[in-house]
Length: 264
Image (spheres, rainbow, N blue to C red):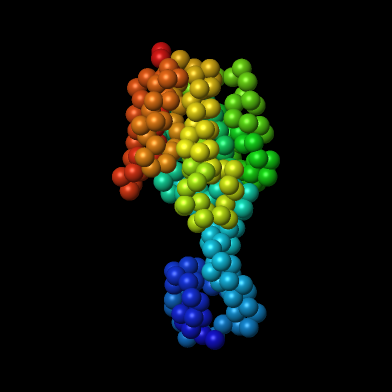
């Protein structure tokens, strides 16, 4: 079978098919495009078929490839961690704007946010926490691969940072409501990192309530949340005693991150 035929017969999005075929061929997508009439070796065709079947069943391309780019960094990903989303880059942008010297990343997962911040600001002290040990090990491997020094800790939310205060706390916590129909499309990803209770706000409540005791005077808390949750999240931040509460939209214009700072 020729390259062009293999892609056309895949039954999935042609861009994804080209990406997966390039992976099993050990070449670039550009090379495939330049040689559409080249024959695909039998063993490569079999491996490509396996990839296609996994994709048809709904497995995300990032898990099939075992990697995902985030903020210019190539991160290893697996089903123990959420796949980093482009919209989460807004959280990194806002964190960098605050020019903090110490950052706490809650629920770090693959380490995407913590590593992006550290890569952009090498002198920042970054502590990253996750309650899932498998996820934490994935984050540690990503840090080692990128040669970035992060203080990784295992535990639930603020528990591993008891008694410490930071200039900035960031988190992309679980915020999908337990009955959300979109969860079916996310079934391959770790549900504990997605579901935030009946209304999706349980984890955000916990973080907002405890954050002030872990912030220095004038320190910021930044939280990613779901579409339509900005008003309730703002109320939670205000109830926790934070001020200058603001919500920022992602590139699609959807309110994506809300934050507030501890009074000076």
